[in-house]
Image 1 (spheres, helix red, strand yellow):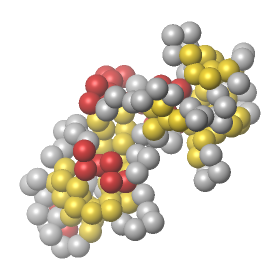
Image 2 (image 1 turned 90 degrees about the horizontal axis):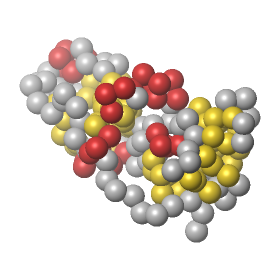
Image 3 (image 1 turned 135 degrees about the vertical axis):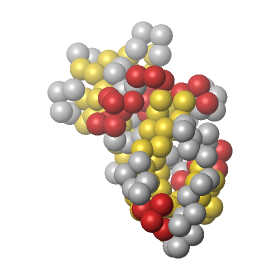
Length: 160
């Protein structure tokens, strides 16, 4: 079985700002939902329902439901009880502590662990997936398939 990673963010520009303090961006509030303070959250997790088991930093967020065929979930945050309050949270980024992520099986990696690894003379700057498989974006602008990759976490490199 080829190596796999669990995607907890596909947006590299977000990775660079969150690496400090051991936090990982897992979603962003994109708007209000209904009249009773629920919010729409754009998730950056592999599966939107992963939010059910995540401890979000600085927010007591309760997963309500995932929208079918979407990376958006509906959630409720303690103390937010009307649409205006929910709307005021638009663009709020949601983070988890790196230490709260579940342990992975062998040959599984978090995308955040691959960022910065060496591939030949280049480094991985982002991990993308446009539907046809996982792709490593390199510092020289090249994009290479993650299929068949061998990840060496000790030496911080990926080989094919």
